[in-house]
Every structure is written in C-alpha cells, then in structure tokens.
Length: 136
Image (tube, rainbow, N blue to C red):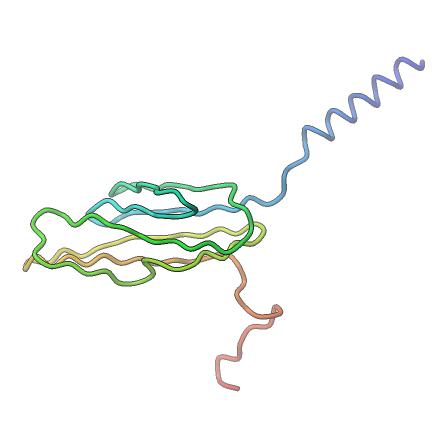
C-alpha cells in the first residue's frame, strides 16, 4: 500500500513539473514584402529578413530595446528613401507580440521607397484608461 501511494505521488509530481510553462512568450514577427532584403539590428544581433519571407524572434526578456533597420536597394534604383518606423524602441512586457511589416514602392522613374510599420499587442493606455478621442 505504501509503495502505491509513493508511486502515485511521484506520478503527480512528474506531471505537474512537465506541464508547467515558463509564462507568456514574447515574440517579434518580421514580415518583408518589400522588393529588397532587410536586416534588423536588435539586441546586438543582425537578423536577415529576405524579400518575401517572415521571420520570428521568440523568448525575448521584458524590457525596452533599441532597433535599427538596414535595407538593400534593388538594382536599377536611381533614388531611394525610407519612411515609417525604420528605427526606434521595442517595449516588451509579459506576452508581448510585435509585428513589423516592411513594404516598398519602386516606380517607373527608378525611385525606390521602403516603408516600415510596427504594431504591438500591448495596451498602450496609461493605467488602463484610454485617452478621450474627443478632447480633454
């Protein structure tokens, strides 16, 4: 009888240890639909995001991190520019999901413009209260 109780307790302990998660996972998704490749410089690492692909960065600790985007200019471009959130800060809390989308326009005159758009799953309102859209 004592042996059965010990085995049961060990089985319960094993199941509880293996089913525990580390908590919410923070994730940054980089989607590149621009004509050229982009590189994200983030946390001392450069991540290549080839044109037409999506890359995910996971298990990022909570905190505020600076980032910078470097991009390739396609062959044939005579002028180039960048718009949007090509650099800035990622503010990461528990369970944060960030989506960065790179897109571009390459017109007939050879002007190449790349755009970066960043969205986050975090509630950016202060103290959980959304700002009044009508005014003060």
